[in-house]
Length: 88
Image (tube, rainbow, N blue to C red; front, side, top):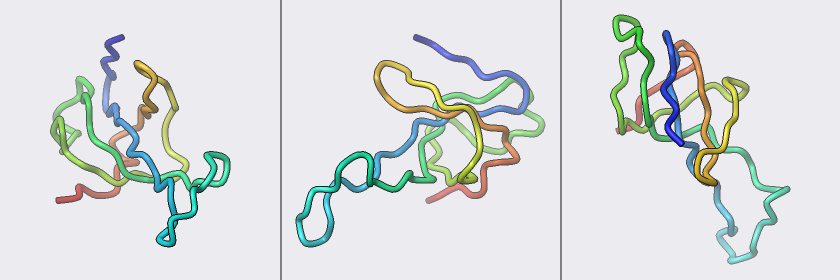
């Protein structure tokens, strides 16, 4: 499925959280913390406002966006203003 965000929105593929502790204990999915980082998959049509590029690794606001699944992977559609930083 192909999703193209509109306006000042950005499509982000959510980075998976840690599944094991440092000591090797497996953390069940229900207890894993939701990460706030991901990779930009697509950007909206309002490119004057959006200052990130495809494949940038970004940090976003914890409660931002709309969650969707694309090909079994978790994604978010967020407004550009909810993107906090580009991670290099």
